[in-house]
Length: 544
Image (cartoon, rainbow, N blue to C red; front, side, top):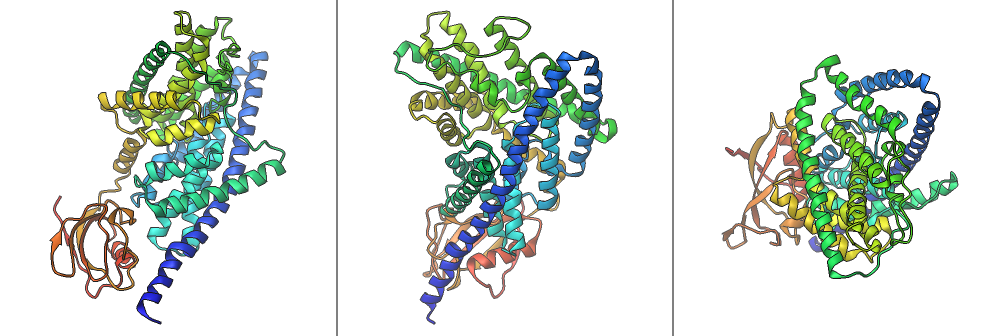
């Protein structure tokens, strides 16, 4: 067999069959696990609403609620102490795992997050399913690659693919899931990431849409009823002002999260597990005020629909107050609980809760501006634009944000207001120098767990062999070891250059690669899988 044919066969196996098979397996596993998880989360939310309704009818049992919630909070706090991977929504940790920074045992994390987040929602906590679904999907990707004994590159790709499948199954939003893998997990629009994520997402959604009807659950998930109509330039001014105010609320949310993180670190009661009593008892108190404080916030967003101004919002009154006063109370409650959740690290999602807060702020501003003369037809626009602005200001994932808005509303008629909200949200965050909250939480997790304590920066000199997987690929499209950078490229004539991301690597060339690692042998093995077997591959330590 000649060299070219052997190389083509190897490339076909590595880039087609291998990745295809692994991505399908990841999608199957993630689809089954996360579909059942989301069904149980829905049942838990319904159960907690019925429980709190019963308690309001029988107030004598309310003290038992607080005793049970406090005990459950300590149990969950203890679980988080032993399994740090489930702290918070799990999104930062699984992003770190997809980049090769964070290492974890998939079966421990999967079982712990599954149980802990379900316990939160059954206790009536304002917990979303989307963040944990994403981490559970990443665990499924890690499981398939490890059980099939695949290399580190495929493992990272499958973790990202599983995470994408998890988000897609939770939202029933395939494009959002794929975009998330590239924009958030890898920070790279690589063909390999795109292909793996797409295959896993499609497979997982096929499983979801087969299982849910079989168990008599609806397949769809979207916020129906939003209607968008043409309106004048003055109305766009109202929308821009509303998006700016909402984004400023997002800046406040961002800073409060990290203020509370510092405060909660000082609480050492029961070895830190005792601090979870605070957000749980507070959430229980809010649940007795309004049932809108329970669960992720899907019902709240759906009740904000006005069908293009044809109907009124169907929000139930709080304390018999007016619609706008009730909305303000609900938004403030959800704002406080979401900040407490991220600040304390409660193992549950804040993805949908953040969307609910942004939507609620938009609804309040819409009612206020309508009293000043804004047309009622703008009401649904206001909800969507403020949802997009709040999310983007905090998460800093504009592409994911706009795609998510389209898929969740089922309409592309809101393109212009959604873009407007996302641009304003991103700009306000930029002006106030807020970072992407999941990225900052990842850095905090790395520091707290001491993941960089044994990390060294190494420089490798590699000759690209005839069977190398990176032949004909651009530097940008290759999944390199963690925090890696090709700092030099030497062509066949001996000319040395500093390559950019679009430089295509060829057989016989030499590259100088630098990366940070705590496992020299694993990194050497990874690089040889990419560039081919090296006769004498050495690693020189680089001073930072």
